[in-house]
Image (cartoon, rainbow over all chains, first blue to last red; front, side, top):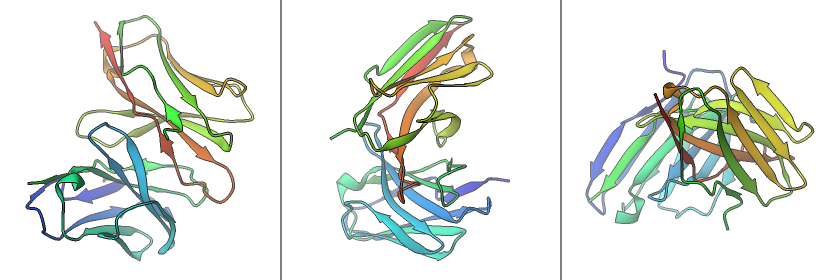
Length: 112
Length: 114
């Protein structure tokens, strides 16, 4: 019974394509996040949603668009994929005050 | 500008000995610090945390020490076990309204030899 689940786990796609990564949490948290782990292994926050409202939006190309249909789901859509988008993307959730921070297992995106 | 730094990319220790992982930060607004452990092909899992009002927090074999004046924290694992072999990330969070914004270090690979 996975707390934060992401799909797919692996994604290989060609440059220029549009793809989505889905995330769902069953912890009852009201805040969800997307993080990117780049080739240098840094984990950097991209977006955060609280109760479907965008509250954190780091400097991310506008080809990346998060969508939160409800507080248990936060999807990431990426348009016109580029080679530099290859990374591992982690979804996470927490309470509004940041407690109980829980990560999904990651989606390894490879753009060829 | 990397606000949280783990300057040791890797650490190797013998089973039963102490593992000490270090982390430095530069942002004075950070008031809550966390350590995460990550196995390959899995997401980071929470290990232990400490608030800036404390200088030590202990949970079983894991102890985190915080030195605010030096902007330094460390994670001690005693005794180390082979199952502790993983990547350890230090993370920090500011107070105020950005509770959820964690800033991570680049991780330290810990290898515990039997």
